[in-house]
Length: 255
Image (tube, rainbow, N blue to C red):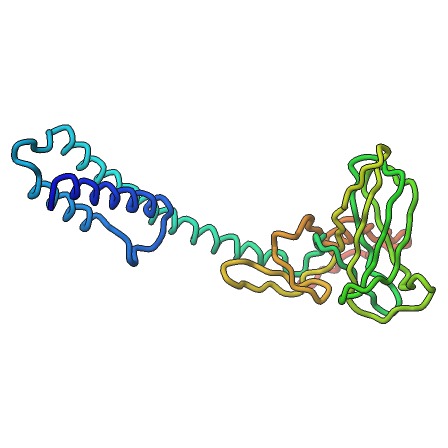
């Protein structure tokens, strides 16, 4: 093996090892420190005697080996940290059980002819707000114009009727909100709806909550509330009894 070929092979191997180490990939089928050292020794044993590697180049390559070892340790540490954080986040999701949450979901549930309220937020006034409701298969159900809508948080409730005034069947429907601004530009709004979390499930390292019969990732929760705590906090104390009779004197039971 010639010196140039050996150096070329070593250089390519170093590049591959450096890239894979930074990515934090598995070691299967990839070069590690042992392979690096073997290539380094091969280069040393096949170097040109008339033009040996200088001490600076040798030191640089050995320093690179040490750096790669540190990167491997760092990657392993980061993997452990990520797993720990995922576990902690998953267990924290259990705190959502029984809580009322606001979910990011462009859907609504129709139950007994009454549509689940949908919430949306406008960052500026809209000269018109268009509501489009579709069935699960994408077929149109209702198109409604709400007209001028000021900036702020709003709530929309569907009466369960389609464009022809026919009562639709219960189930899950898609909803799309489009705001037309004063300058004529259109903006698709995100619809939110509320529900109480009845179940928490963990799958592929991610937590999912079940609310209103739908399973959604934890990342789609935008607000957490607790109705029972609100009711308790707003409860009024019972009125004092005004017609209390005074208790008689205590009797001495000593004989």
